[in-house]
Image 1: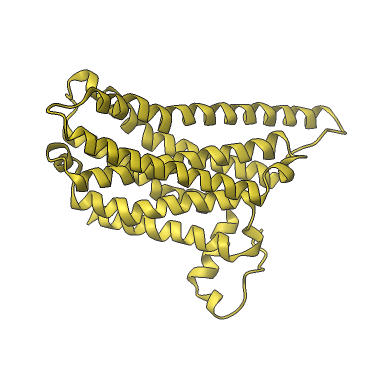
Image 2: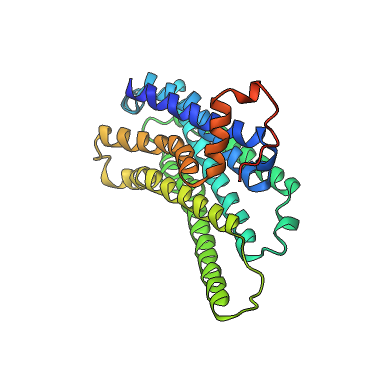
Length: 288
């Protein structure tokens, strides 16, 4: 019942994020389109991965590997990859907004963002297909294939997690350095150069928090599966299961982060939940 409640909260929270951004005209901008893509990923986790995870626990799939488990694992990996790629695109968007504010609107326009989103979902779909094919091929092995172990514990996590995370951390470090430089410039000069608006700083802080919570939830699981083959699989099954659910629970957290940091999300949420959108046209309402 706890996991079912977790699934419902995840679905409802991300659905409200999507509805709020798409309904209100003021919120339709490149950054928020990337947030919608991330929310759709989290919504699918709540709709697909949570029920499948509740139907067949990690332990049953460890001891009785079948096609259903491979399909479920493919959803796990592909949606996690999609989340990471969306966060990568968000970090790039924040880089141009903070570090190159004068050229931001030209470089991060709607067309560029749509292409980025399509690439994210396309790569994630290919990863999902690759997981299923790799799993089917491994059935021909009498013992666990070396290639399967290499893909599952080294190459896969490196491409889907470690490399994107290093890139994102480097980008946010660069953003932090530029933000501190802007702050010193404002303090030391009455005529500073191009500065970043308060809204952009708030967005950067919020989305950096999203990345931080994502790393807290996801990193333990990836570290576990990376070193699992090297310690003779001594990690207890319940530990793996708990880490997997911790990873999935991240999909529930993002709407709460937006509600905590963004007044526009709280305002839009109140309008939608009260049913006012069915009584009149609130699409052009000023939320901030």
